Amino acid sequence: MKNDKKGNQYRVNEQIRVREVRIVGDNGSTVVPTRQALDMARQQGVDLVEISPNANPPVCRLIDYSKFLYQQKKRAKEMKAKQVKQEVKEIRFGPQTDDHDYNFKLKHAKEFLEQGNKVRAYVFFRGRSILFKEQGEVLLLRFANDLEEYGKVESMPSLEGKKMFLYLSPKKAGVAKKSQQKMDRERREAEAKEAEKKIKEAAENTSETADEAPASGGLFANIKGGDELLKKLKGEQ
Image (cartoon, rainbow, N blue to C red; front, top):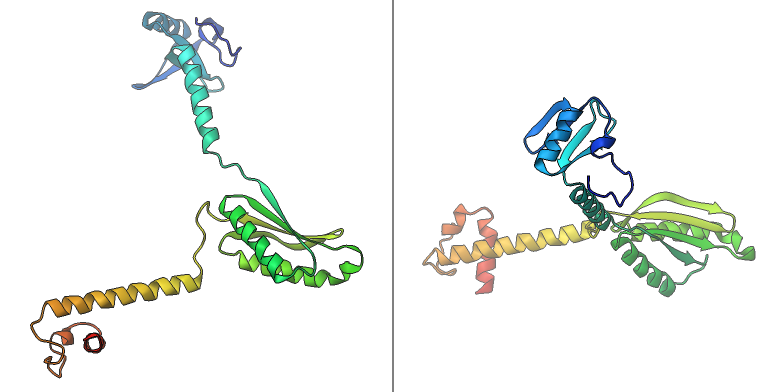
């Protein structure tokens, strides 16, 4: 048995004292007496490593134990690297924050959410400013509305002592939801490009000029929206 520098994290070879084990490998699995499994390990110059002790019978692999530990460590490292570290970023407001300060903090909140972090925004009421708690709530709701493309509200504004909190969590990492205005604009641009493409194709496939085209529309009569395309073509020439 190879030296176990990690301690008894897994039972190996003679440490496995059950009557039989299930050997798993590239060719499937098979249940054999533990003594036979140990003989197989010695013949292959590897170790009998118990990887699932709670199974019935326990599941083992025939593998070099040092190599097995290295693979486990490598896999754990890769999984840790894939995990996105999420932090909670704070944004503080006063109950009468001006537009310049508001927009500045809004910009930072967008960046935090795009990076996959949560945002905890709060309005701090100092002294008699607690009288403006409704104004603070309106501010936080406006803040949430302005960030709807980047984050979703975890909890509505709530007063805790002298602070009113709003919690936002990021939407899908690195992907902000498109606003309706942006989607409408992209749709109009796509329609304009498609119309331009049809005009060019029509112009290339006919020997008639726009001025000589028949009143019925000629080639354009067979195209959906042909009258409009004809008008655009005449307008360009």
